Amino acid sequence: MQRRRVIVALMVAMFVMAAAVGQAGPAAPPGTVRVAYLQRILSLDPHGSSGAARITWIVGRHLFNRLVAWDSQAKRFQPELALSWQNPNPTTWEFELRRGVKFHDGTEFTSAAVKTSIERVIGLRGPLAPLFAPVETVETPDPYRVVIRTRDPMGTLMSNLTILSIVPAGTPMTELVDRAVGTGPFKFAEFVRDTRVVLEANPNYWRQGVPKLQRLVFVDIPEISARATALETGEIDMAVGLPPEEIRRLRQNPALKVDIGPTTLTRIMWINPRPGSPLSNVQVRRALSHAININAITASLVAGIASPATSSIATNVLCYAKMKPNEYSSATARKMLAEAGFPNGFETTLKWTESNPKEREIADAITGQFALLGVRVQNTQQAFAIWLDDLLKLNWDLELVSTGGGTGDPDFTLRRLYHSRAKRTLYTNPEVDRLTDEAASTIDLNRRCEMYRKVQEILWNDAAAIYLFDQLEAYAYRTRVQGFKIPATEIFDLSDASVSP
Image 1: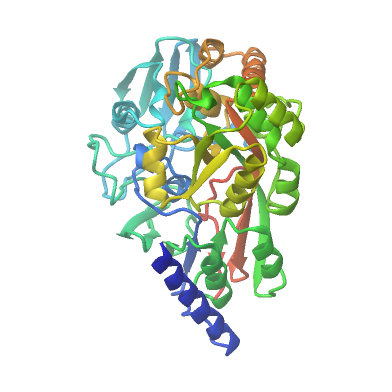
Image 2 (image 1 turned 90 degrees about the vertical axis):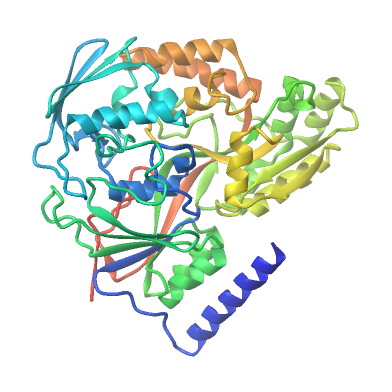
């Protein structure tokens, strides 16, 4: 780790020296945009477990299409590969498909590809599998019509389909890790692990005039300072996920523009209530929720790119319900710990990866505030791949994570992450299981929202996690990038962007 930091420091110094003597980074080829995100690209498979990272979804948004998509305000569904749809009865959904669409390898898009895609997600048993668990059959009565039948009414189907990337019919389980074939505006060109993913314009894309770029390159620069400096020197054209101090500095540069957009993400500290662990005691978890000064962290460390969380889902997610914030008080937290049988605190671990702005500082602040209670935290940074592996294996006590996103539906967070069947933490509550299952199988939105309000109350009162803040996303880019539209969610799309000479 120390050697890596030295290398990064040298890279940053070289960038700064180049800028100081007036040398710009290498110019991008004509029609090319180079983007650096805050996560490493581990896989191109949009269905698999390692593809659950947001960067895989962002890259996939350019490689693949979905049946339906949200509109620009994330309020209504609009056609993509499906031209129209109907719900003739509570357990049947019929889709009429777009004709004349080709995959990047030249094969025709038909209903068989939709069947493969849904069955593949279920078969891989990854993070998305529970979303499609109610699907009983996917029927293909003709090449341009799909009938999805579910065991129970499925109120989440349409929103879940907004994140289902359509892959070619017959795609095996392991083929898409290092290369991908879709119907999207860009096609796969190169994947150099830990370095870059290169996409080239799809000349046969079904939307006329899209894409406007010739090439899109996702460059792996996970270190924040190096990412910002690379943008300033022209090494890249866009940097996403920067902290407040970098944003303030970059806004002073006339060659750059900074936009702040909404997300459906909530940054939280997940709590793993292992049997026998102090964290299995709800009183302990509630004590910890009073021990963190969330308002101070939000106002200082993440000022301008976050707001204090007031629920287990973000404010712009469907069916959001505001909860009463937990008052910050070390005295209250110490008293609650003593009443729970831990007057001298206890030892625990906090794991995190530097894939979000200010993660190190947030982890340090939480560790320091817990120390005031006698809670001794082993504060552990991990490389993203190791962190993700430990996360999925439940090899942790406390974890800093971002949750939400994806479908924009509360089911994506509340049932996918907190249902006992999901096994994302060891937290279980039979009422949460019942309500999320019932809400997911309810078509009426008002009834769904009432059930989700109750779930949010339970999670908040149980301190299933400590909900820190709702995230905003920072997009910093060179003025040569034109036509970038701030997305309604954190999954951005450069298909309509262009570059000036």
